[in-house]
Image (cartoon, rainbow, N blue to C red):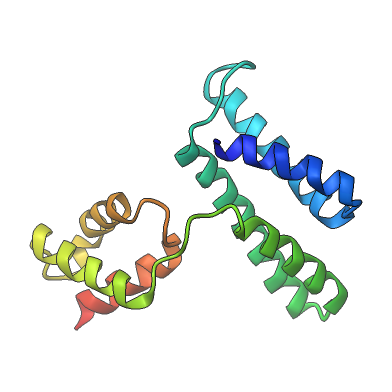
Length: 151
């Protein structure tokens, strides 16, 4: 079952259960996935799971930014709403890497690339992103690469 099929199936289940929050989030996600597919190659296109994960990550990032903004603005009720939506979206992402795993992969990649300074961070980031394949977000990845290149 592809990720899009899983979203469709869960959307139907959410409708049957009358779970308004889940239905709203999954409808939004389905729309975002369809929009990305149309952008990619026309109305009849389907996204593969890797492309679908990228769309979901983008939606997760939007929720995280909203939570941050609402916390600054003192809007606790909106923070809770966004956190619920974020938890639903996270169900569709692959299992995140632990900090130890990530550190090990970054160390190995720095050795492979032969990077010695922050000036070579771009090359390291490109190689690391290919290895982690969506199991860690870019911000966490960047921080780890910077930390290891600094020491």
